[in-house]
Image 1 (cartoon, rainbow, N blue to C red):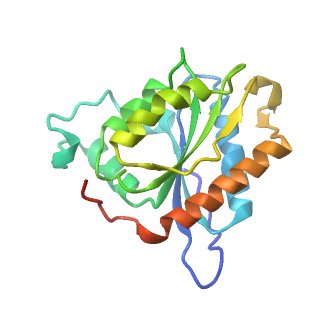
Image 2 (image 1 turned 180 degrees about the vertical axis):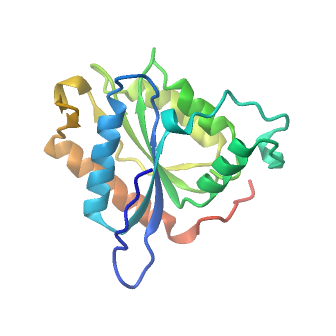
Length: 202
């Protein structure tokens, strides 16, 4: 797990931002993109980053007997995931586009929980071919709405992502850097009223 120790301004605690790598495929471009997101967020400052690689998290297909709204979790992997998500102030998902939708691994991770996501801001960095993952984002939006997550806009869209990866490192355009910086600012502004660990009743 990667973490940032940058505490940002001295008069405020860092925002706990969970960055999620939404693809688990071998050779995925998403890891390179997510590592750029982590690096840039660290440079911006003011964030304490929880870097979640769903391939490493390795959640099984959602197997809890009861609906997540009850929060009566049976399995240790669910309890650990719930605690980690509840501790976050906001989220940034790095997601591919698969067949006009998004990663099933990301859907599975979202479906495990409910209240732990609610009331918190989420930014999206999508990637793919011509559309830059935008159709996957469109499919993801109703799920985020159902979980009462708050999109911050200024999504980063990366078309033909492989063209921007050199020797495993993602090389962003100036426009992509600007949009990510703006997104981080909006996440920061949106977290002021929702402290981490507080479950929002919906």
